[in-house]
Length: 126
Length: 319
Image (cartoon, rainbow over all chains, first blue to last red; front, side):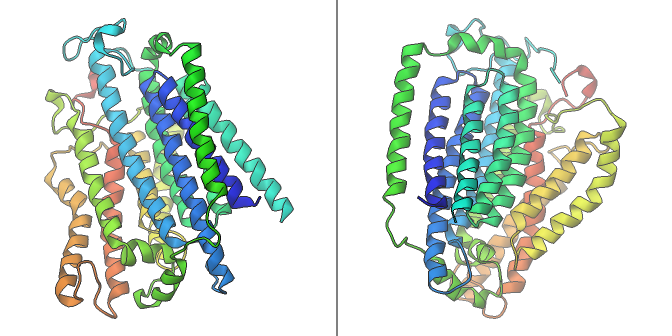
C-alpha cells in the first residue's frame, strides 16, 4: 500500500458516496453537490493514474514526477465541471423562482403546484 | 516513507469524512461550507500526487468560484428547503441504494488495486517532445501544443454554457444586467477589500499566466484569479455587472476562442496541420493564445458566476 493507491481507494469511495447522495438527497442543490463529489472522485482516480505514470518516468531518470497528459485533461475537466455546475444552478434558481420548489419531482406530486411566471417570489434569505 | 503514508492516510480520511458530511448534513448551506473545506483538502491531495497545476485549479476554480456560486444558491433556496425532507426515499430503499453504491465503489477500488504495473504512461513522449515547443511546464505544453484540440474545445464549450445561463432569464430581463450575485449590506470592510485587493490580485493573475509557461500555473488558474477580483468588485457594489446585450462584451467573450481557431487554421498552411505551430514560432504563438484566452476565460467565468440577467431596476427586491 502506498500513497497513490490510498488516494485511488479514496477516489473510489468518493464516487460511491456521491452516487448515494445523488440518488437519495431530494433537494436539487444537494444533488448538484453530490454530482460534484462523483466528478471529484473520478478526477482523483485519473490523478492517481497520472502519478503512477510519472513513477515510470522518474524510474527512467527524468526529473518530472507525474504524467502531464492526464493532469492537463483533469484541469480541462475541472473547468468544464464548473461551467456545468453554473448552468445547473441557474436552472435550479429559475425553477424555484417560477414554481416555488427546489426538488425535481413532478409538479403534481409536491405540495406546491406551478403557477404563472412570477407568482411566489419569496424574500431573499441573504 | 511510512510517515508520509500516515499523512496521506489522515488526509484521505479527512476528505472522506467531509464528503460524508456534504451528503448527509441537514442544511444545504452547511453542506456547501463542507464542500468548500473538502475542495481545499483536495488541493493538498493534488500536491501529494505531484499535480501542482491541478491543485491550483482545484483551489481557485473547484473550490473558490464553485463555492461562491453554491453558497449564493444555498442562501436563495433556503426558504424551499423544509419541503424537501418529505420526499426522501424510505429507510429500506436507502439501504438498498447504499448497498448498490458500495458495490460500485468496491468495483472501482478493485480496479485501483489491479492497475497494471508498470503503469502505461505518455510522460516519456511528452518529455521528449517538449523542447520544440519552447515551453518548460509539461502541463502547459500538453494543453496548448500536444493536445491543443482539447483546450480549444474547452474554451469554446464555456461560451454555450454562458449562453445557457443567460437563456434562463425572465422575458422582461432579457439582455439586461446579470443579477445573481449576492449583495450584502455595503459594509466598509468589503468595500475596502474590493478597493485594496484587486491590484494585487490582477498582478498575481498575470504572474500565474506568464509563469505558467515554465512553472506550475497557466491561463485557467490566472483567469480564475482575475475573475475572482472582478467578482469581488461587483459584490462590493463598486461596479455594476455589464448588460449582456453589450456588443463589446460579447466580442471580448469570443475573442480568445477566435484567435485560437485563427492560429490553428493558419497552421494548416504554415505547418501542415490544424493547430500545428510553425517551427520556431511555437512559444510566441502559445503565449499570444494564452494572453487572449485568459481575458476571455476570466470574463466568461465571472459572468457564469454573475448568473442570468435580472430586471434592471434593482429596487424591486430581486437582486
